[in-house]
Amino acid sequence: MRPLLAKRLLAFVWLAACLSVLAVASTRFESSDLDRTFFPIMFCLTFPAGILAAVVGLVFYFALSHFVVLHRSEVYFYVLMWVAMVGAGYWQWFVALPRFFRKRRD
View 1 (tube, rainbow, N blue to C red):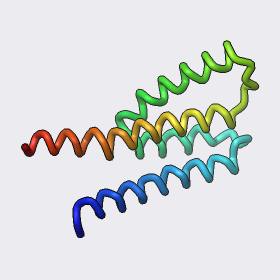
View 2 (cartoon, helix red, strand yellow; view 1 turned 90 degrees about the vertical axis):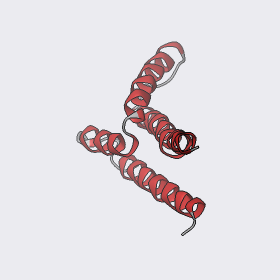
View 3 (cartoon, rainbow, N blue to C red; view 1 turned 180 degrees about the vertical axis):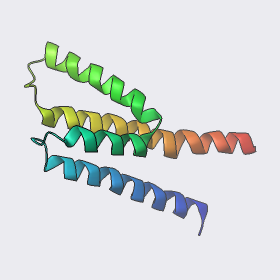
View 4 (spheres, one colour; view 1 turned 180 degrees about the horizontal axis):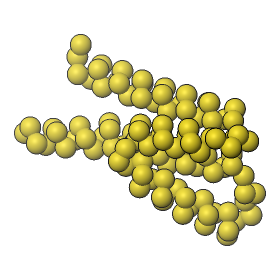
């Protein structure tokens, strides 16, 4: 398999896993055990950049809900955290890491 095709296939599978976590979470927003399932899985998929993204997302969520009239809701919280963690994870796994290995090889 060509490297570009393998990279795209891996990115598709990774994004599908992240979307499935959001889909499962969207059916359980009122559940008390969502924190115990959502964050560990997302941390595993986006580690280590996901941890920093979660902290930044948390600060952004609290600032946004404090300064802007945003109804404090778990839906906003989980979607914002998911977007931050997936963005950081995608950048880490499919942009920064390949660039690092490409520069190291050259």
